[in-house]
Length: 38
Image (tube, rainbow, N blue to C red; front, side, top):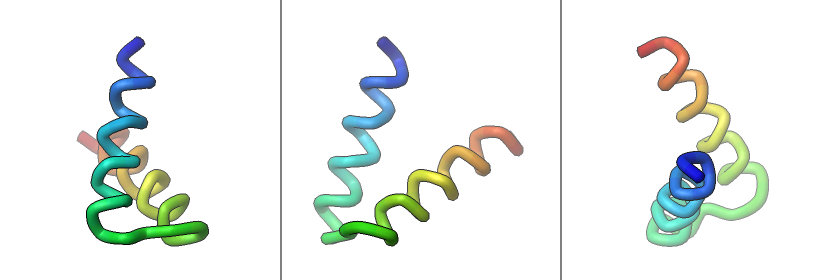
């Protein structure tokens, strides 16, 4: 259930900053990398 909440937060941020398509995907990958690195 935590993952779904994470996705909702990322989607909300992406929507606020009008990210679409490849930019939204890149943003998600960036966040995953940052979480992995601490």
